[in-house]
Length: 235
Ligand code: NAP
View 1 (cartoon, rainbow, N blue to C red):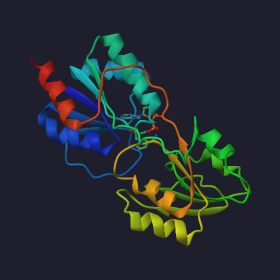
View 2 (cartoon, rainbow, N blue to C red; view 1 turned 90 degrees about the horizontal axis):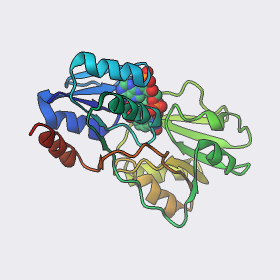
View 3 (cartoon, rainbow, N blue to C red; view 1 turned 30 degrees about the vertical axis):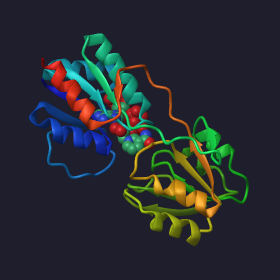
């Protein structure tokens, strides 16, 4: 079976490593991660471009292992698979269970609106998701991301760090910068979870952006289940 794995997550890399020659990893190309596995980089040009690529290259199945907030790519995968009648699986880590102390919001704009004037904010939403916060000159922001943001909030600092993060790291950041609020996407997973416990311990208000709604497709939570799905396809 020839499988295209849509990536951008650690799980996608683990899956391609587990599938071996059967799989090709596809990346948007936003971060510079050295890879020693079969991969391709860059957008396809929408759902139509993805369908044409899948057909031209002779793929027989797609696994959408993109980040839970990469909604456009997931919708394109759904549409391309439907157009071709191609099997599609989604590999998605579970969301973090809601804590009573969190303020949950639907999107980043709502998260920015929820921040009071004078807040000292730890922004952990990624370098491409800072737009809603740039216009807020009445708050101070520490923006953490893997790649340097092109347009960080003017009033604040940028911190370049790559997960996984330890409790010690997260507690030190919140204390050093006198953080009062933290904005996070509900990405799930262990690599960035320590910030949630650190925020609770430090009395930092967590503003949690809920996951976007995605098309209903067959979904598994682990790499092992995704490997099994591929094995069953071949039978
Ligand atoms: P998005 O809004 O869903 O996708 C924007 C466009 O980028 C897509 O329409 C597609 O272009 C291209 N693209 C996205 N993922 C791709 C992939 N795996 N292979 C090839 N092209 C891809 O996604 P995003 O939120 O900008 O995220 C971009 C990538 O970063 C994703 O792969 C995601 O897994 C990863 N990521 C995202 C976040 C996040 O918070 N959003 C966090 C960590 C990692 P075309 O339409 O031209 O095909």
